[in-house]
Length: 433
Image (cartoon, rainbow, N blue to C red; front, top):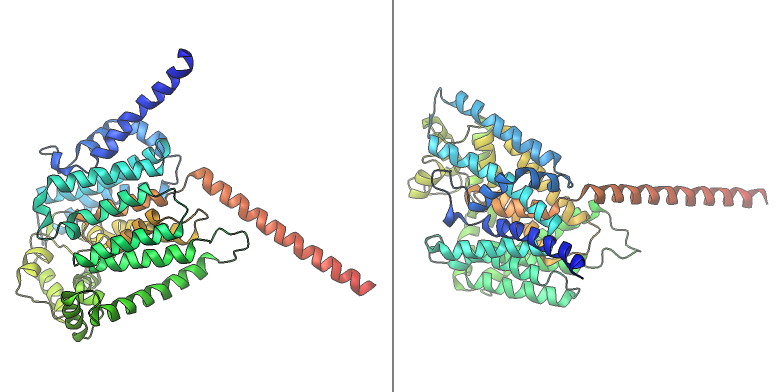
């Protein structure tokens, strides 16, 4: 009896360090001084890099790792090129490098945990770590704790709790509760993403049925239609006052500008396009914008109606660094084309896994994916890269899964080909008869 239980005990003891590391990954409140904001979880994962790597490489990690390394390698070259006409803050440069290195190690560690503990346990531990982190840093809440701190980790935690449920009604009710909390706390973008989550749960719930013939491309086209429908419905609800008086007034004011709600809410994207046109190779981490950069950005922002003399534009967007409130744009600014391609790869892999996976859809994966896609376009890297990395880890398939999928596709093609040959043979037989 003792001999049988000993391996089980050792296995459980082996899992404890993994659980501790995943929980500690988000705890910036315990960051190591002088290490650019590295958390205890990141330090421990780096110390166990060989163990993390040996487990994570059973997944399809080639492109994410290659593009991240390329981004890190390009950073010193971009900085050196920018020195001719830009000032560089070394502390900020280190911070952005740590953010990207931390994102890579978080990604690999989450895959390690997913392989050893399972997806559900990994999501629970990581989200609890973020809940503790947010609770330990009340200064980040501003005046809205749900919107700025707790909405994502609490939703991920609860979605992980019901991960194994097979009730579409329960999933939709849960999403509805989270959506209600979001609109009550003036978090319109999260409300929209949750509504879209509910629609996708209803739409894709039975996609694994044997008689289903929906292809990935058709689902992508359908998703575009769903996005447009949810967007128009959200506008109508807001203008009619169903989402509260403040949302009604803000929505009416933004629509009066003649632009979409997204464009009105995230004006930085116009500056990103013009800065990219001026300097497509990027700037480098820690680079301070010069007079020409400020002029290009403000000229682009002028057409959006933004307050060019306000503190937000002059202190945040083109202050000490160029900050474009977008993970993809921030990766391009600091790490050039390699960083932009990395963002594009994550977006594509998350989207394809969302619409093309043969697994049962879950609130956890749909919500995490939609938030990550939103963050890539409209959220700053410093506070939202973890949401992108989490969704990317969920989306990354095992190499064995990919091989099985290819085998199934070949078998389907062979079966279809055999059926066609049989039909042709039967037709010829009929003609001869």
